[in-house]
Amino acid sequence: MPEAALQAETTHYDIIIVGSGAGGGTLAYALAHTGKKILILERGPVLPVEPQNWDAKAVFIDQRYRTKEQWLDKKDKPFTPNTNYWEGGNTTFYGAALMRMKVRDFEAVEHADGLSPAWPLSYSDYEPWYTKAEKLWLVHGERHIDPNDLPSDPPYPYPPISDDPGVVKLKKHFEGLGWHPSPLPLGINRDEAHPQSSKCIRCTTCGGFPCLLKAKSDARTIVLDPIRDLPNVTILTGHLVQHFETSGDGKTVTSVVTKGADGLLSSFKGDIFALAAGAANSAAVLLRSVSHHHPNGLANGSGLVGRNYMFHTTSAVISILAEKFDSTFPKTFAVNDFYFGEPDGSYPYPMGQIQLLEYMNGPTLEGQIADMIPPALVPDFLADDLARHMVAFLTMSEDLPKLENRITLTEDGQIKLSYTANNLESHLRLTKRLEAGLKGFSLRQHTIFEPHFQIDSLLPLYGTAHQCGTIRFGRDPSTSVLDVNCKAHELDNLYVTDTSFFVSASAVNPTLTTVANALRVGEHLIERMG
Image: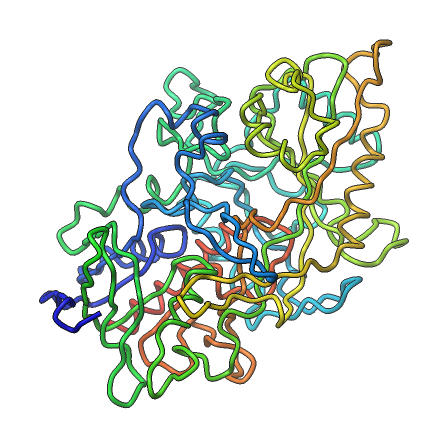
C-alpha cells in the first residue's frame, strides 16, 4: 500500500499492547495504576450485550460471534477456526475453568510419545502469581482433594461451586471406584450463600456463551471494565495489527501498523510493545514483520516463531442415561487421579484430566458435537429431550511440542496451521478409563435401553481454544524466542504475554497460567519503567 495511505498517530505511548484477552488485558490492568500512557489495540469490536448472548441457536448453529476467517490445514484445506475476535478475546466465550498447572508440569516429564520439556521457571516461581490471579479472577474451588495438590497450596479465595443433585450422585459413583473427583476451579461471580443477590445465577448458558450478566470472569469484566475510563488508558477496537516496524539497527520496535475496519492503515509509536493476539495470530504478526535485519520475521533468529504449536488432545464423551440427569449447571468437578498415569503405577505415563462439561441442549449439541458424531448415532430426536438425559465429559491430555506442528503464512498472508496429533496412546487410555468408570452408573435402571452409552470423538483441528507454544520462552536464544521475562531475545522492547510463551501445554486449561504470567511480566515492566 502506498506510504500516503499510512496515517501516523501523533500520540506517543509508554506501552502498546496488542490484544485485549487474558494476556493483554491482564497486563494492561497490572500497569494501569502506574499512570503510564497505555494503548490497547484490539482487532475485534466491543461485544454487544443482547438477547442473542444467551441464545444457543444464535451462538452454536448460526455462529453469530465466531470469526468467518479461514485458515489452511497442512494439506492446504481451508477451515474456520473456533475462535472469536472481540474486545476481551476468547475469554468471553470460555468455560471459566481456571486451574493451576501441576508442579511436575513445569519439569521435564517423559510421556508415552516423548519428552515434555522443562520450563525455565518452576511452580514455586509461579505460585505467588497464581494466588494473585485466583483472587483477581474470582476463582472458586477447594484444595487438597485433587491428589496433585501441594500441602502448601493456599485455600482458594472463594468456596467451591456446589454440585447439582445429579452431579452429587455421579461424584459418589466415582468415589466408589476409588477416584477423587475434586471441585473444578471456576471463575464466576457467584455467591451461593446469598443467591438472590448473586450476579451469577447458575444459568444454562455459561461455557461457549458470552455472559449476558457479565458474571463470568472474563477479560471484559475483570480487567478491562475497571480501567477503561482511566485517563491514561486507551482501548482502540477494530484495529488489526499488520506488523511491527523497527529502528535502523533492528534492535528496537518503534511502531506498530494496524488496518482499520475502513481498510486504512495507521501507525502507533511507543516505548514498549507487548504482543498478546493469541498463539496463532501473535506468531503471524511476527512472521509478517519482515525487514533487512529480520528476514524471516521479527525475533525469529532461532527459526522457532510459529513452531511447537499445541492445543491439547481432547475428546467429548457423552453418557446417555435412562432417567433425566438432574443438573442445569453440571460443570463443577474434575478427576485428576490419572493425570500422571495409573495410580498403581501400571501405566507410568501421564494421561490427563477428566472434566464435566457444560449443560447441553439440542442447539448446543448440533453446533458443538453433532458434526463429530457418526450420523447414525445422531437421529432427529437427539435434541432437547434426549439432551436432558445425558451427561457430557471432556477428556484432555497433553500434546507434545513438535517442531513440525507450526504456524506459517501463505504468500498472500493467510494463516496455515500444520498439525499432526501426537501422544494419542495416553489420551485413548484416559478416554477408555472414563468409559469403563461410567459402566454401572445410572440414576435409575431402565429396561427399554441400556442405562447409558458413550459417544466419544476426538475434537478436530478447528477446536483451537487452547492454542499455545508458538513463541516459547527460555534462557537459551537458540532454543527459545523469549527470555524468562517474556521479552524477545533479539529486541530491546518487545514482550509476548499470551499463551504463545508456553513451553509445554500440560493437561489443564491455560487461562490461569496466562493471567498469572501477565501479572508477573507486569511487575517486571513496572520495575523497568520506573
